[in-house]
Each structure stands twice: as structure tokens, then as C-alpha cells.
Length: 135
Image (cartoon, rainbow, N blue to C red; front, side, top):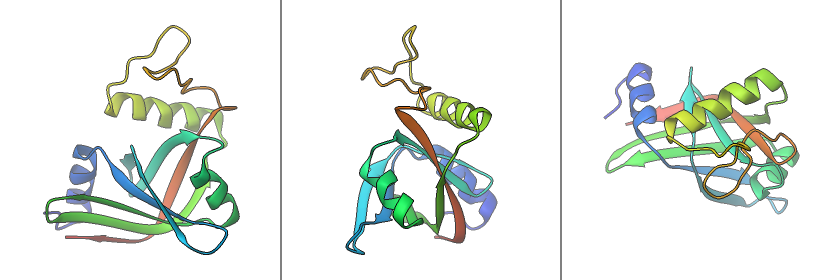
């Protein structure tokens, strides 16, 4: 059970799925499971640029992330943004590939044919925490 922010990092690094919450146009929560990485208190989600979660956060950047296993949990509330910087996009995408041990083909596509390094198709969401809760 995480007892400090240092332990939160270890917990987050071991977990594979998070619940990612955005706010839809009707001011209702939109919750989806996502793969994620975690560094320096921030969560990173690699996703389709045209996804509902991206459209939602472009209208309202308030988000939450919940990661849990058994009775252990980390919940982060904060603001989200799309990473525009090319170097940062590449680093965060590579971190995602490394964590999930993804194999890419010669065109940089994953096993589902998704071109992970194509910024026209993909993006990385950065969650900047306002509050981190854990137990």
C-alpha cells in the first residue's frame, strides 16, 4: 500500500491499467480504461488524436486518473494537456512502448497497426496533478 509519493511511483510503475476520466459536453464524466506511464507525479496517456477523451479535454481540461489493485489505489485529479513538443512526444511514446514491451513493425506500427509515432494520428496527454491521493 503506497504510504508516500516515492511509493506511489513504484505502485504506478507496476500497474498496467488506469481509469481516465474527462468531462463531456453535458458536464458528465466520461471514463475509459487506458494504458499509462507515470513520471515525476504526472501521468501520460498515449491515444488517438480524434478520441472522445481528447475532444473532451480540449473543451474542459479537468481530468482524473484512478489506478488500483485490490485495496491499494492512487487517484490523481488535475489538468490535462496535449504534448505539442516533438521531442517530448517521442520520449513519452517511447516510454509507453518500453513499459508495455510493444513490438513495432518497420513502419513504427504496433500489433494493431497503429502508427504510434505519427502525430497526425496519435498524441500524448499529460496530466498535471492538483491533488494526489493514495492508500
